[in-house]
Amino acid sequence: MNKKVLFIIPPERFNEDECFHPKEILEQAGVEVTIASTVVGEITGDHKGKANSEVVFSNTDVNQYDAVAVIGGSGTIDHLWGNEALISYLKQAHEQQILVAGICAGSVSVAETGLLAGRTATCYPVDVMTNALKNNNVEYVSEHVVAHNDIITSDGPDGAKAFGHSMVEALR
Image (cartoon, rainbow, N blue to C red):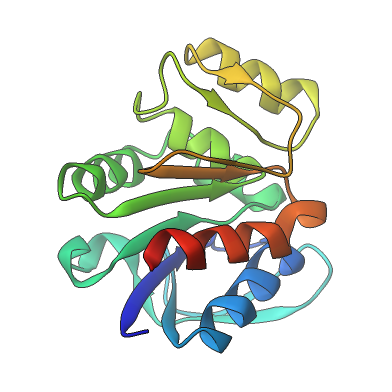
């Protein structure tokens, strides 16, 4: 499969399972995954795992990707929720018919675009996240993955592998 996916992680405290499990599944299917953030360089996860942000997402042309996914972690809440550059980037991706995805706290970033208004989605089942979905007119459902034809959301570490498989299926 000759596809490219951009994973957007926060500049600190991303969730390793939510990043590495789907990345591995996508790469095994022949998908090229690039990790991006608001900074370039090594980023430390919630559990001290390391990832390398190759690019600042807002400096990339969204049209070079087949999917854009926002990865969760405690840093996503602090750095990516309400991030106007990210909201604009995700809206642009959607307008270009590029698959938009979010896992855990990343699902809230997707909801903040308004693209999920009136639809179902999932996120990590804690009040701060489920309420954030509801505040964006999104119906929270308790599932590992909710896959629409244009947007995929996932609940978090427990659904990380299913999230990866769902993205592979959507990119076929």
